[in-house]
Every structure is written in structure tokens, then in C-alpha cells.
Length: 225
Image (cartoon, rainbow, N blue to C red; front, side, top):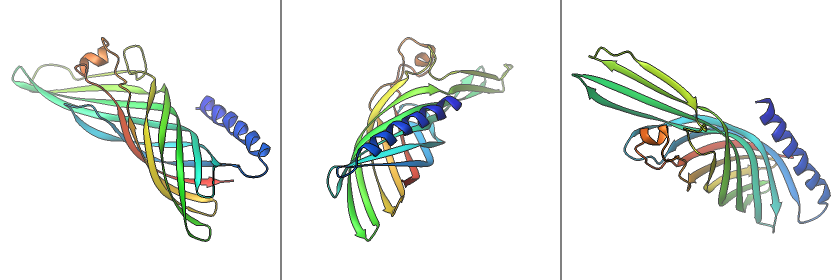
């Protein structure tokens, strides 16, 4: 976590230097944001539950016109999902659940349109792409047996290990929100376009070689300097 904070702080200093170098229009504005996430996957053929998480990071925007902006962020973001299933075993049942916990450095790049509703009060609409790099997380598989003489099991592996998911992710992102003076609240949705499953791995075998893509939504609050 300390390394993540150092990276975010270094990025903030970089954005700050850009901001200081821009005296007039076009200009940069910096900010901070934090919020909650609900993520799952596009994986088919399994019962899935959303994974609650959070995000925290830095924001920057570049004014292209009075209403058009180019926005980006550097955030520490958690994603994942929970898969569940069951099967009959020797007259009993075996229930399993697999919890994917993912930690990413997430960097979207979006075009934003701002509509002035009143003085210092605006609504915005934005869309674009995102890239993310996995830096941590664990995948936990639990199996519980009933009616059969077999012990319950629990295994844990690195989510982005050699038998786990691919680290790099990318996709589309769009959202909307409100701004009041220096404060903002926004809702965003992400849909991954890359298959994160590694073929010929233990995890791929468990998933029956089906594609794994992230998708989720986030609600955040922000402050611009």
C-alpha cells in the first residue's frame, strides 16, 4: 500500500508541474477522488455475484473549449467477482465458490461535455477508454461437501500469478455526474474488451476456457484544486 501511495503522490507532482506551467487557456485542473465500486465479470455459464470495492486517486482535466474537456485519472481500484456452483458427488453434493480479488492501477482517458445549469453548478457527460494494470490480489477457492466423506477444502493463489489472470486490462468507460464549485459526484460504468483468462492454465481449466472480462460501476466524489 505504501508503494501505491508513493506512485500516486509522484503522479500528483507531475500533474502539478503541468498545471503550474499552464497560466492561461488552455488550462489544467487537478483534483482528488474516492468512491465505491461494484464489479463482476462477463463470464458465462456460472452463477456470479458482484464484488464490492473502492477506488482512490488523482484526477486532471484539460479545457479544450468552454464546454469540452479532456479528463484523465490515476486511481488505485479494486475489482473482482464471486462465482458459485454445485455438483452431485457419490450421492452427496459439493458446493464451491471462487472469489476473485483484483487490485489495479486504473487510468481512463475521456472526452467530457459540461452543461451549465446554474452559476457554479454543472452537469457533465463523458466517455472514452481505460487501461489498467494488475498489481495484486488473491483468488480463493472454497469447496464444501455434504452427504459424502470428503473434507472441505480452501486454496488461495495470486490472482495475477502464472496460473491466474493476465495483468493488463483495457476497455470502454462512460459516465455522468454533477459539479458544484470545486466539488463533484459522478457515476461511471466500465466494460472490459480484453479476455484476461490465460489458456492452458489451472484457472483456465476451471473456467472451461471461457473468456473472463471485467465489468462494473462506480460512484465517486471528487474535489478540484
